[in-house]
Figure 1 (cartoon, rainbow, N blue to C red):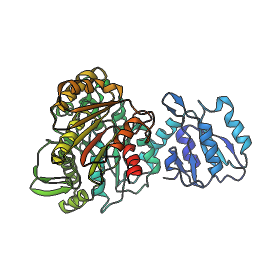
Figure 2 (cartoon, rainbow, N blue to C red):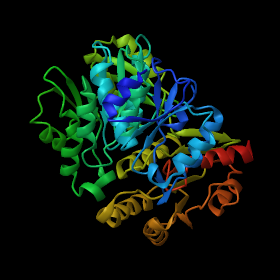
Figure 3 (cartoon, rainbow, N blue to C red):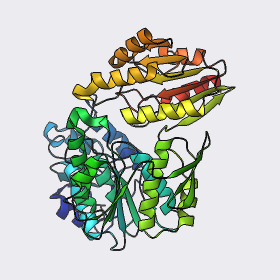
Figure 4 (cartoon, rainbow, N blue to C red):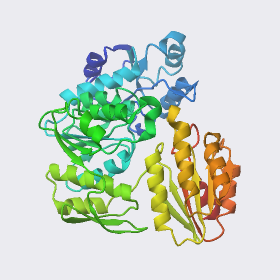
Length: 482
């Protein structure tokens, strides 16, 4: 999306703080506040965002200086955090020949949100359809399946896969072309009020709510509260909009006061024809479909996608083709074969109890003939007061599994380690959470050293746990074992 400086100033309550004589005020510019998406330095106004990671503020001025050196000449600054310590003035003085424009706003994050709202109302085509996906689990997979269907015959934008938090949702409006047919959003509900905000910003024509589970009970305390929060995605939907919703009774009850058209889909409302390591074939509403990914939970995602696509007027043949092209993203069920030693890495965002159990069950069924089966697990975040009882349920479940070895990583799940060790014949090991994922870490080193015989190992962890990304383990093992 491109904007005039006048549009930016009027919609962010900003003002020009610095302008060089060569600045072209009639030119249109892109806006970017995400460094990974900043690539067109000649025509982009960069918005450095004040970040705090692991309780330590990022040195935003070092980031800014690096981009000035790289060729970025236009910026929006946060008056609250940056102007008061004079570092901005120092940078202007140091690089006055390399900076063409500085717009000052009170808060850069708010400026992004303001420009997103302006874009949605004033810049987007009236023909664009907006689609939002949320749920405790299955958001990314569901979004990617629908994306595969829509992109076959339409212009669709979904941005970076898995980018679903509040700032990134707003930022997508700065990235998109105004004439897309479909604008697709994966919406996180990790904070109270997020989904209501998303609904009011996006005003979805179609929404999918995949499922509720205990992933965020530490925040919401009960599943009923969680259902009420998830359903707020429907807040700004009209009577002509369509919502495809998991037929959980709590979600049904929570949706009663919303006016959009609602289709409730029961998990398991399909006929399974075949599922194996390559994928699953099933029948839904008398039509046969195939998804190239394992796991019954993925079929439950797929039938909601099918229902949504049918409501968009997409043909069954196109839905079939789109589902067959589905590719998992973000370390979801990645299978590596190291000369008969199978490693399945399933490390998306924070897992829930439901996804953990579903993935383990799929693993056991698919690799029942493996001569040695191992399970690696890490903690589930945001359980709050439900942590102890959830880990006890997991421990009791694992202790009855037909596996040979359990590896528990991190002090948070020592209770699982102790229970399984004392109540089963499963070989049970414990490792401290890695400080850094590399081949020198004891946990990673142990995995590498024991991937030398025929086996099947499921690593079920998190994409990010502080600085640790358990999905990176597969890359280390690949580098060592080839």
